[in-house]
Length: 111
Image 1 (tube, rainbow, N blue to C red):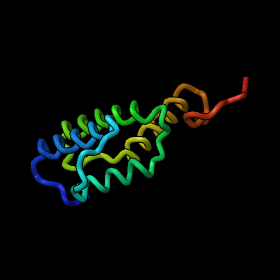
Image 2: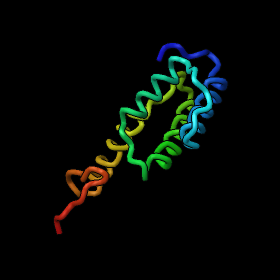
Image 3: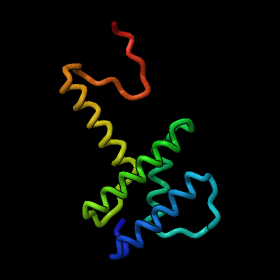
């Protein structure tokens, strides 16, 4: 992902347009920048469930915005965002004295 332009505002605007297309479910173009292809492949690799896909992508988009606002010169990948969330959940569970965290989406049949 080294093909970024130095103008982070333009980059963020392009990213938001890409995310809008994904959230809408329609791609009205057939050419993409290399960094867009990298992000699309990463999103596809994450295998999001249809039910949660839109909400996760919305939250991811907000996280990218916050990351850029904090001075990052590169865009956060969805896989990195999901990993950070997983680590945070596990840390919160451990801090709350719950021991090992139960992975999201699984059921814990302990009483």
